[in-house]
Image (cartoon, rainbow, N blue to C red; front, side):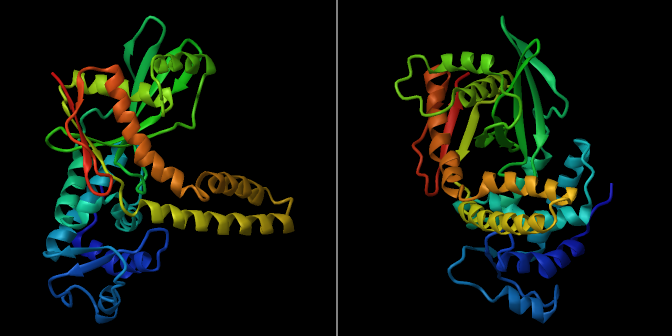
Length: 347
């Protein structure tokens, strides 16, 4: 497998990443404040641009530049390796540029205080293969259904490295449950960043049965399919002797990121509408219009909804687990502005 070198990462960071961020090309601007001199790494023009800091933006302090870039190099190479294991062939340099632009979206408030700890965790998340199942496999069988499990590697802009996907099957009936976005560190602590509704198969007969989970719940708050996915996931963790779960607070760049996506989706959608009106027989434009329309409907002015799903709804889901599984305990109270929720699975 081709690997990227440290000097290549430094080159991409100074030639592309800082410009992409400061111009807010897709990703919100953040500032990098290096405590060491950088003139041995790059030319003055790029350094001047780098230190032209916007005081209103969040910033990270980098005390050891080589450690910082070594982490990024290892993260890129391990990411490419992981994609290859999941039979996704990716270009190393292109992956590097995308990752250097997007990895900051995963930062919480405390990550801005200790960038090395954040990068170290990201590297551990990528390298950890526990529960990896690129090919779908049967997890267990009930009286009515078969439950299948698989994992997928997320795109580089997603909240986590992986997602867990459970599918309920009954002969020809299929119901793909919402995806659980998760990561694992070296201490076998699981981090759950979201439970994301699936766009795939949803059988109405199976879904009606899922609503039995709401029986006796005064204010359900959340869809039973998400509760079901989490209960299966918790059971999987129990079977692997996992007892510690962290629900992080909101990743701080997420809201503005979705604001930028909203603006971008509107711009491209309106442009393709104009092009298609001028060339209504063009098949490529027709297909492109349909694609951009779906993207527009998915992201336009959705930042508030997405913020809710990643904060309040996720917390509601965790408290719903207590209604169904007495082995789960919440050991702290969360402050959404900068804390996390810690769950313990009693052994």
